[in-house]
Amino acid sequence: MKITLENERDLKLMANSIRSDIMEMLVEAKSGHSAGPLGLAEVYTELFFREMNYDPKNTHLEGRDRFVLSNGHVAPVLYATMSRAGFFPKSEIMGLRKLGSKLQGHPSKKWLPGIENSSGPLGQGLSIACGMALAGRLDKKTWRVYCAMSDGEHDEGATWESILFAAKYKLDNLVAIMDRNFIQIDGKTEDIMPLEPLGKKYEAFGWHVISVDGHDFGALRRALSDARGTKGKPTMIIANTVPGKGVSFMEHLYEWHGKPPSKEQAQAALLELANERAKIEARTDAKGNASGGGKEAAAHLDAGARKGAAAKKS
Amino acid sequence: MHLLDPLAPDLPQVPTRDGFGKTVVELAEKDLNVVGLTADVAESVRMHWFAEKFPDRFFQCGVAEQNMAGVAAGLAYAGKMPFIAAYGVFSPGRNWDQIRVALCYGDANVKIEGSHTGLTVGPDGATHQALEDIAIMRVLPHMTVFAPCDAMEARKATIAAAKINGPVYIRCSRDKAPQFTTEKTPFEPGKAAMLKDGKDCAVVACGAMVHESLLAAAELEKNGVDAAVVNMHTLSDVDGKTLEEIARKTGRIITVEEHQIVGGLGSAVCEALSEKYPVPVKRIGMKMEFGESGTAKELLEKYGMNAKNIAKVCREMISAKR
Image (cartoon, rainbow over all chains, first blue to last red):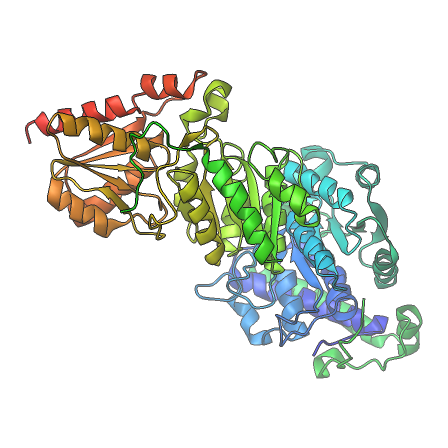
C-alpha cells in the first residue's frame, strides 16, 4: 500500500529524512552524486508520497502511474525515497553501488523492482516516457507518466527529439519535471552550454510550461494538479532547485555535482539536517496543515508514517 | 533442403525489406500489440503498408532515430511489440546507445529493421551503405541478430523475431534479390542452414551473399571442386556446432558478407572455430574501407564480393599449401 502524506509538516520531515539517507548512502558508497539528489528531496517526496498512484509491494500493478527517471545519476534520492515509500527495507540502502546490490550506481529495472527504466545515459528518459504515454493512450488507460529530467541533459540533441515528439502526439498523460539547478559536471549550465530561456523554448515547442520553486510543496502540488488538468499537450514543470539543498557547504556548488562527502563532511551534513529536522518538528501542526492543505494528523514519520489510501485516481 | 535452383533464370526478384514489411502487417493483424515506427523513411523501409493499414498503431518519428528507439522502449515496457524501421546506417547507426541501454539492458521487446544495408544500396554511396551494423549489434548482450538471405527468409526471420521476447535486429537490403528459398525451407534461429554439402571447402555466408555463394559453388562444381554452402542467418549466436562439423569435413572455411570483414560474420566464425576446431579461414567482405557510388553489380565486382571472386578465393585456398 502506498504511504500518503497530506500535510506540509509531514512532507517536510520526509524530505529531511531523505536528505539524511542520501548523505549516509553516499559516504558509505564512497562515490556518487551529492548535489542533485539533495536538491530533489521535495520533488521526489511530492511525487511518491502525494501525487503518484502505485503499490510498492505490487510493482507490476497494471494501473500504476509510471515514474521514468531520465538522469539516472540522481539515483540516491530515488533509492532513499523508494525505501521510505516501502519498496524495499531501509537497511538495503547502504548497499548503494556495491557488488550484488539492487541499488546499482545508476538505477536498473533488471536489479530493482519498481524501477520502470534503466537509466544513466542522458537524454533517453523522455523518449521512453513518450512511448509509455503512447501505450497508455492506445490502451485507453488513465494512468499517467512522470518523467524526471535534469537541466544539463538538455544539451543532448535526443532530448529535443522527444520534446518535438511529445508535442506532436499531444501527450497530455505525460508530465516532465525538470531539476533546474543550473549545474552540471563541468560547471554552471549557462557557462557549459547556455539553455535559457528554457521555459520559452518548451512553450515554443508546444508544451504547457509551469515554473515553480522546487522546494515548495504547495507550488509543486498546484503544478502537478495543473498538469493533470491540461489537455491536448504535455506539461513541463520546471522545478527551480538549489543543488546541495539542506547542506550549507554544498549548496549551489557544481563541484558537488558528482562527488560524495567525506566522513567528516557527512557528519557535518547530518548534523545540519538534524537541526533542520528539529526546527520542522518544533513548528505547530496547525501551521503545517495550513500550507499543506490536508486534514491528516501530523504523525511523526520515523514512528511509522501514516498509511493513506493509494486509491487516489489521477 | 527445400531450395529453388539458384541458377534458374526466372527466380522471383524481391528485396528483403519487402519480406519484412509485408510480414509486419500480417503479424499486426493477429496481434493488437504490434505497433510500427519509422523515421521519415516509411516507404523506403516498407513500413508504409503497415502505416496504411494500421494508422492508429503507426508512429511517424521524423528524422529522429534516437527518439524512435527510446519511444519504442517505452511502448515495449508498457506491453507493446514495436517494430522500428529505418536505414541501417541510422538505426542502429545513430541510436546505438538507446538500443544498448533501453532495449538490451532494459530487455525491451522491440524489433529493429535495418534496411538498405550492405554495398548493394549502390548509388547512394558510402554514407548510406551500412557495413558495420552486424558488428555493433552482435556485440550487445540480449540482442538477436538475423541477416536473412532472401525475402522469404526475411519473412521467416520477422515471424521468429515476434516470437522472441526481447530485442531483435533484422538486417535487410534495398536491392531486389533472387528469392531461392521456399515456404518449406527450414529457418531455425541459431541453427545454420546447410544449403549445399561439400567436401573441399565450405563457404559460410549471410544475406544477399548466400545466393552469390551458391552461384560460386555451382561454378566451382564445373571445375571439379565440391564446395559446401552454409547460410549463417543468425549472427548473434553463430552456430558453432555446424561450423565445427563443416570445418572437420572440409578443413577450410570462406566467409562472405556485405559488411566489414572485422566484427561481422567473418569475425564471428573465426571466434567460434578458434575455440572449437581451428582451420584456415578466408574472409570475403569489405576490407576496412568505405564503399562508393555505383550499381550493386559493379560494387560487388569491384570489392570482390561476387560469385566469380568467391569461387576464385575458394580455388586459391584449396591450391595453397597447408
